[in-house]
Length: 272
Ligand SMILES: [Zn+2]
Image (cartoon, rainbow, N blue to C red):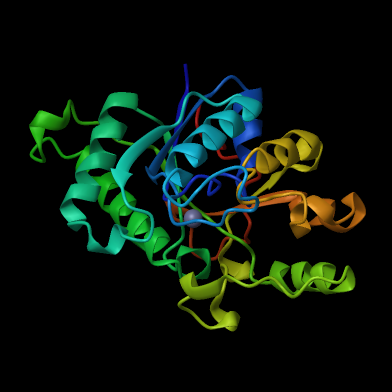
């Protein structure tokens, strides 16, 4: 059976710009695993009836399990790192954890964040660095033989929110009476630097047909997307176009110089 591994930082990172492409993988019979470095214990609490700051990590773990069940993924795995604290983790420890997962699960395709973490979230950036390092080290027989037999991943992707989509999302929010999308104190980059430049996106996966399933999966993260959240409130006509395509930047193998991008519409393109 084909296997894909997605390496992220928080419960719900598997949703934006990603869950449609994961559903396309499930549809073709791929086993999709998510490795989540934290339990999201520093996140929002949409309704005090759902969690306390003390219970939030455990609650979000269960939300994540429910969200993955809706998508048809395997049970998510969690590392025991604190939300907001991945930059304090020894980088080699994080890389080793990803190498261990790659060698055990032996995926042909791996997904993680782009180098800027989407919007500069320090945890996302730490996960990007660890996963890129693990991609090489997992294949290196000289690296940590105690972590399992070497495994070479065929394709490594970064999730890519097209830079052009943020004004459209802001417009949808504002048109319905919400403030423009903001990323709070985890945004460490300028608004103009958010997302991935459209012209380096290699992969555009059609995802509109998965709208109902991915929306249900997103809303399973109840502490993050309560009944008053824009993603729960905005009409389908405003939201659905923003989720019609999931985009990625293929890190390995890189696009051929001079090739028109995007050059593929499927994470498994070229793999037989
Ligand atoms: Zn996150």
